[in-house]
Amino acid sequence: MSLPKTFEKMYEKLLEEVKEEQGTPFLSVLERKALRDGLQQGLEQGLHKLLQDLYGELPETLKERLKKVSDTEKLLALYTEAVRAGSLEAFEQKLTEYL
Image (cartoon, one colour):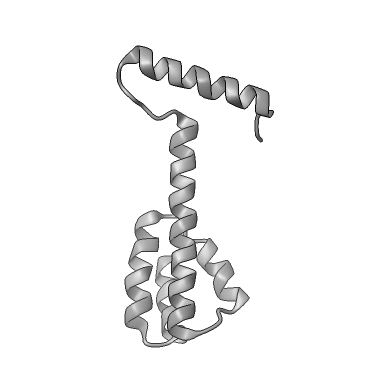
């Protein structure tokens, strides 16, 4: 769900005013969620790119399995697993441990 552009601008302006009044910057719930979602998406894209660079085109089934990993720490650990695996098949076996 998204706000209409007019309301979105009003919300952003109001949020900035509250931040200034309180004297300390803070992140709203929406901003924190956006940051988490952005981090998650970036890690997923980076892992896909790493795996493609190392082992070639990824099967759709693997892409779908990777989407199921929602924990940031697990995604970061999978970067190491990708480099150490030596093959896409070995990586897929390791991935099972993270699901």
